[in-house]
Amino acid sequence: MRCTRREALTFAAAAACAPAAPAALAASTDAGRRFDPDDRAAVRRAYRRMRFSTAPEPFYWWMRGVRYALIDNRPEPLFEMHVGTLMRCRDLDGGRFAVTSIEVVFNTDLEGGRLVERWRNPYTGEDLELRPTPVGPVTIEYSPDGARTPPALPGSHIESSATVRRPVVVGDDVWIASEDRATVTPDAGGRPFRVADLATYRSRLSEVLDPAVRLVECDVTYNDVTDWPRWMRMGDRPGTRFARAAGRKTAAFAGMPERWRELLAERFPAIAKAPEGALDLPPFRFER
Image 1: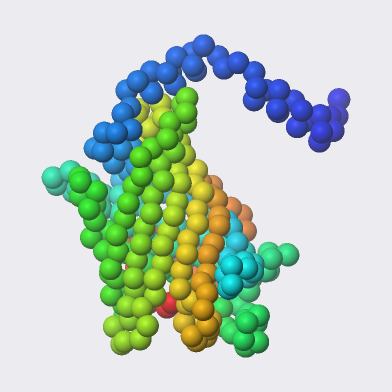
Image 2: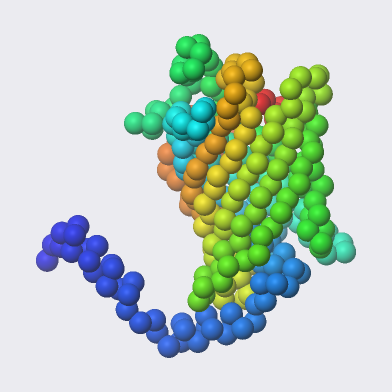
């Protein structure tokens, strides 16, 4: 029997509205009783497990979304973003831990997913080179109270801060929002580049609280707000850029989106061939 798309959606909606199994309800209720969203130490532990990992093995994050320019409160879509990040966590003494990461972002056109390497700025009319470059690897150390050391990037000085908001718990779902702000100043001088990352992570609370689960499944919704990057040559024009995206954490390279893996193999074949080895490479130079 073949069902139509509408029938499939109707079935899915009915399944979503069906009562949960008693065992699942009991598990979610028990998890909610064991988690206090006002306990900052518990929140920091949950945040680490959702965003990062408690296992030493590398893991991945992917996101896909759209990059916009904003002038006079009018958003203009520029291109699609395909974001891939490889991370590795290492426990340190005194409850501290370190996270090493490398990120590669590919920008594609809004229609067909074609890699954009030359891009016409709609505000200036200039044809510009849009070259993907890995960011990192960088290592950030986190202390038990949530403080962290700023990452080091060749050619730049970084000042940063981070805020983790009070979690929202509904049944066996938990959401934690974070706000990361950074100012990147070139060592050679010039205008600083400011960025604010706003992310909301969602996981199953029962999994977050289960110590046997070392890599918790997690989804993310993401926005950022940035200054004009130097490569856009926007000069003193007022305005800003922002992005909206969504993604997921995965344990393996094979779990990354196929299009991102294809682009990585085309542009950075050495990383694609041995991705986990990229965490031990010398840092790529940061170009804003």
